[in-house]
View 1 (tube, rainbow, N blue to C red):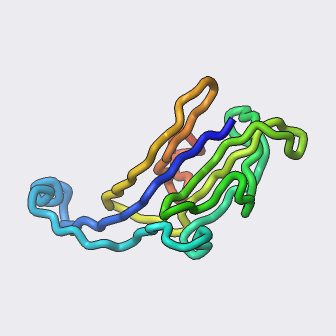
View 2: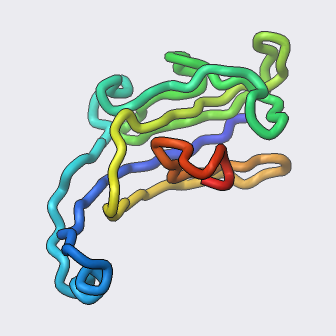
View 3: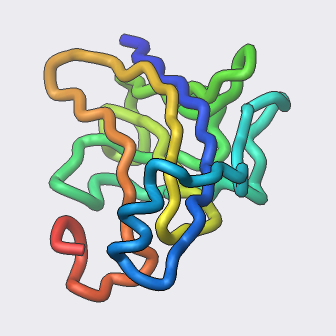
Length: 142
């Protein structure tokens, strides 16, 4: 079973105003400045942009191991990031996949993401926006 996902991430900053009301009113006139992007135009993931998470069954009683620097699970092909879940034995589990975090964090920005997500029984592909600091507790409250 091969499940593929690709995404192209682009981040634009929005001009920030001194107050929330002026920021909301400014939405129609906002200027877009590219402040970060990854076009996946090399043969490997850029370690300056991405962090691999490597663990097995850590969240939500998941049945897979997230692997690190393993091209069977995370690779770039034709300008696309492929994150592939696989049915295979690995470290006492029967499934592997990839889990990535951006190395940088942003506040008050717009994210443009193009992704194709797989469908299937017991699959839960996701792109999350998580807080850098767990001010209100861990996921999902933060």
